[in-house]
Length: 326
Image (cartoon, rainbow, N blue to C red; front, side):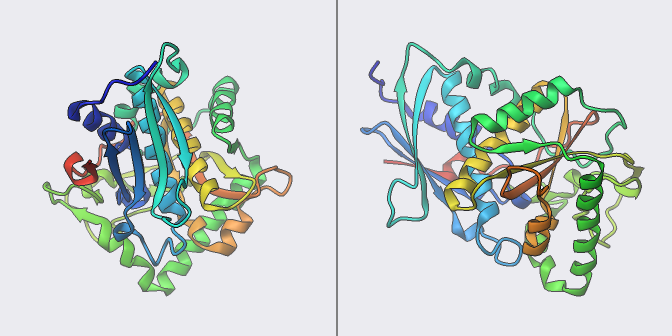
């Protein structure tokens, strides 16, 4: 069914949903361009928001943009639209990550549309989770969600969890010896700035960890945050590892879409979620993050899942700042 031209209100609603995606330090490294006559939305990388110290190859930037692309697909499905997506449609323009053609359809993607309510509910939680297992049936749903987007999600065994936690301790020790590694965090933490439209405000830090073994990055560092409580986190964190067979930019975009599909599916199942990429910012530790018995060739994210507070919403850039209409 041919598409009716999308009005500005509809396009802004789609982009607003897309921009609710997670990204490293909430940098929101995406831009959208709508071509009215063609009925397409372009997703572009905003390289001004790249992080040279923690993400020199822009892999995490692509993951965040992939998550935004998936949200766009979900929002379109909820609006009764079909999305035909091409990754890297112009070889000479590497900032153009994807082109999405929007058309009407008499067969909406119900599997995507049902995820739409989770977009507004999903927030990264840096709070303690309960020490209780995630049901196997839910784990299977999450693994299937990643598979449908061309990635893999595995739940590591005890030895693998211990190794991943050791990697976090390792990178925390290294960071103390390399203060320049904190430059990106300093750039993207916002303190109590209520006017911020990006980055991580103090309100999203969660409590300071005074016990437990959950791999939660403390964005406050040694800085005291007035009124911030302390808490004991879970002793047996429930982790999942997301990865792909290959390690190209198009794989990073697919991994980002898979990541968001997993997060939204987890949200609908009543799970709180947290992303743990700290140790993966070091190439040697990233190589060690995979289970050699797994089909995953390259790990892109470690997820922490559990039952607990859903987390705090972080600010978002105004739609007019990230959307161009032609």
